[in-house]
Length: 557
Ligand SMILES: Cc1cc2nc3c(=O)[nH]c(=O)nc-3n(C[C@H](O)[C@H](O)[C@H](O)COP(=O)(O)OP(=O)(O)OC[C@H]3O[C@@H](n4cnc5c(N)ncnc54)[C@H](O)[C@@H]3O)c2cc1C
Image (cartoon, rainbow, N blue to C red; front, side):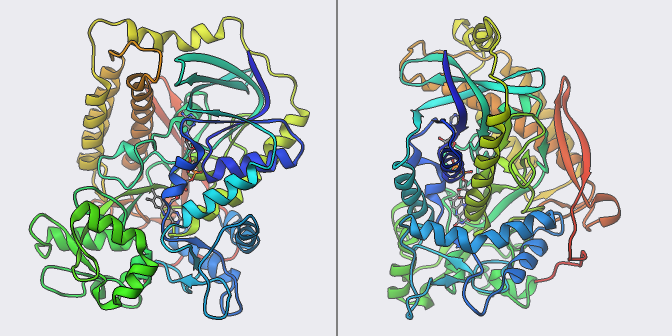
């Protein structure tokens, strides 16, 4: 049996930062990752990371922008803590070796981002995530820890209300193992793949969130799903908000600068929920291009700026759409991009389950509330990754030795092994595609009661069919058929929590836009949704939002 003091699941920015903090606190640490750490989705982040540095900007403005961006659902105490940590966090990453772009005077260059009152997004061209991930990986490499690469977490082991370890699956050999741990940090990242049209990598399937949910931890605010306004047509590849930050503009098929209507003060740099709805409205009202999209124009920025500041965007549009952004407009339409919801945690990463901590996109603290501002998520991974690592290390010191149940591995893996023994059954890849269609169609940018009810019905039907799946590939080595099946099972649970939460919330707030309840309803709905897994699906309850200084106001950009 494998045994470690602190187990971190996930090796993106959040997991690596948590591991580093736990090691620095003197604990023995193991990191499990289904991917090579540098292939984590953090490496796909383009636009940048927010921090109020320099004289003209202020931490207070960053706090205010984040509170407003969240449509007043973000916890203000957490947001204050988060924004205050921003400057030191970015400086630390620079000291670890991240090469950020510089201004003429040598200070950190900053670009404007949506919903921000000041240009505060610090960047490394349009490869900020990769620059951060590489620097942190090199820093972590100077420490001692055990890396389990290409291992999939499948479930948590819980006894007497506390986490005792994990069950994981070694992709290279096909073996399952129980791993005893005093504390577990869940940092498994996004789950955007519950949708078909998404900017998220194929690996973003929410395994850790689903495992925490299955083990009894509460999920928070799952109904809040961010759609990024500008994803490339067909592929859904992200065109960073940095493109509009550098001066790109959106135009409808009539050639109008469409955002003038929806955000008369900041135009294309309104927050993401506002811009996404604007694009969908233009298309629905007949002002989109045939094929349902609008144009993002960069041409007026000039070749030099486009090719130096937006190098990846040039590569993506040229290679995946045959379009040169220097001379042609880019066809865009929104795609799922970020999950505001996740495993409910406090500021220090503690979840509702003893011994389990969470950070990064898998967690919900909540600082993003109903809508995340671009550039706040990379920052979140580092700020709260560190907090979760420190808290897990402290917990591990006082926790008793983990005890794993006799024969527990057989019990935990019996249902999974049964999939491979079936001679007939459902194909998990078919269920995945059907789930993605259901989520795209019924739980998208605009929602209403009848669609959401249909969404619930269809997701539940898929869950029933999932109980009958068959894994055809019998090979123990790199059995991706089995990994796929595990991921689809996880995503179906999360899809259900999203749609049930969305159905219950009869108001519009941030990214949750109900056509049948078009206004924000602070009297009834200024509260977080908590979902706990029950035998018949998620059981919902609600918890208050923390306030410090900002009274809720109507959100206008
Ligand atoms: C295309 C794109 C661009 C973005 N751009 C920006 C930006 O410019 N600025 C910004 O602030 N935010 C941006 N975001 C959001 C931000 O990048 C993410 O929220 C953040 O990087 C998530 O980091 P993470 O560490 O939580 O997860 P990830 O980086 O996704 O890491 C998850 C880790 O968990 C591991 N894992 C998952 N499941 C398992 C399992 N079952 N067993 C073991 N390991 C597992 C994976 O191997 C991986 O190492 C962007 C997101 C996308 C998709």
